Length: 217
Image (tube, rainbow, N blue to C red):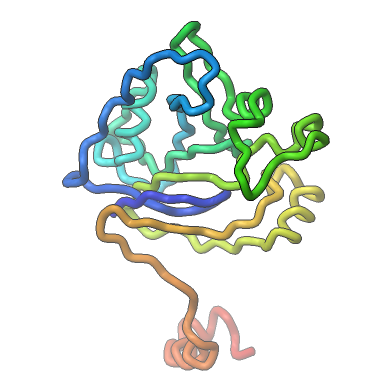
């Protein structure tokens, strides 16, 4: 299964299988100096976690190849996630061809053009713009191409995320929390929440091997 995902740091949304719509080339857009409504092609980071679909079977690999002439699909490599955002572990690059060929990290592009990330609900203050501390996007949009089960993750809330990022930035790459939104573009199974504790205990006690591992407490 594959999904299309939207979120902040570690999220899911999707991926597609072989019968999903093909990857279309990015349209050729006319150059309009100063236009704030232009579409900017992105070269996106590709993650190769072991659970991803392999080679050209992966929508992630297909999308990466369609958006980057230098990207070649390895038929033995799992392509699991395509990241679109400013996350330090996989920043997107803005690719311009006109009037000059320019490749710029999306974070830097937004820092230089803060009006492009403003909304009617949340505008940057002059101080924030000067510091550049809010130039990054507060979410991470992902495309997932899933072949096997993903690992279980625990995500901190906003307050704890800021604390962990300040204390251990090498482990916690950003200060954002991890609410997630997922949109399946092909049939997809997901675990949402856990059983009630009494049901979990009953199932554990019914399996002596598990009891031996986790203990009676």
